[in-house]
Image (cartoon, rainbow, N blue to C red):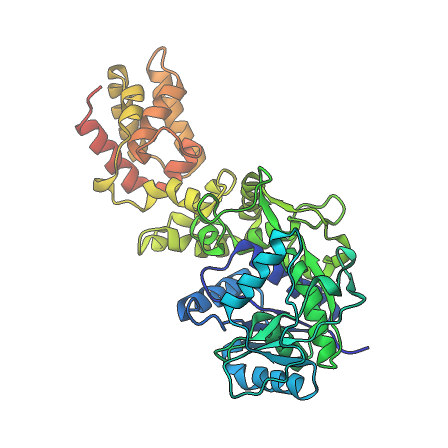
Length: 465
């Protein structure tokens, strides 16, 4: 058995789509489990739309997800000599021919067939004409007129199309550039790709590509077409309506572990297990468990998965992942590691965690106070107890949650009818700018004595209860 070789072959015409990322993940995991070679090939023959920035976005997205490759990235645009040689070989052995029909002529003949209820395939007008290279021409592959171009798909099972329904398609344009089908097959043959794992949107391309493999006398790889990803509502994902780029999810504060976990589960399962580390994906993923129906991209499930990973990530790593979402220098705040531990249980994304950590990394004089929270919790009757609490907090030793709680209880007991809840909420608004935070004692502990007292002084000085 030949060593397994797979490839991920994106077009650098935009961002890394989550559908492409899942295809890359499936290729990577299946290949790693099999001990094979994973190749990255950039299919940039569409020079009008391909950009270096888009290629970088694809490569960086794969790296962020933790998907490495063994060879590449190769660029299809660098392989023109190989593509031209493949076409010339097909012409030389009579398996392809030159076609001088203009697009207008073909469209006219096609319209007549369609008008009578027929299904158009190229009518073979140039098949036996023996046109030479001196006239402007395209090149067409001679496709068999009988039999079925079929294969046993690792996901969809027996698949294929009757050869007569395909017709002699173009493999090289009149300007000399190769068609996608020719380039991809020639590259796969040259790179020794044994298994092609790609999206189900390529199912209709495969029969013609099978004809190309056979015309080139090349081994036909094993195919696996994975169902497309649809939205939670079952509709096809739309760039205008849905978040579809890996970069978007990264910018929103999703962890790479969570993205891989979410993506692998869109159309694949392993018992009832929901959470998978990248090592588990590599060890457990198999194409036999990939579903045939479209996979649903459920954002709520991603939130749950991401929160689950936030809960279990080591503290140092979580602080490092949070850094891009914080103001410059904020990671140096000594209270940040402690606050991260308080926030990991209640944060769905890093962006959400950063917003909840805003009060800690904002200079005391710049802390914005939520007007609704102040109106609700800065009651006139609380000004005196808060002032007393400020004095008690100045004496607290050590500055830890238990001692802080004792100070609150001391002030509460000294003011008849005062509950800890209203006192805590007033202090929370003064210390964090909002009415929501982790436990008040833990929150003040990470904020520190000096900053807590400064914020209480600021609040008391501007009290408008």
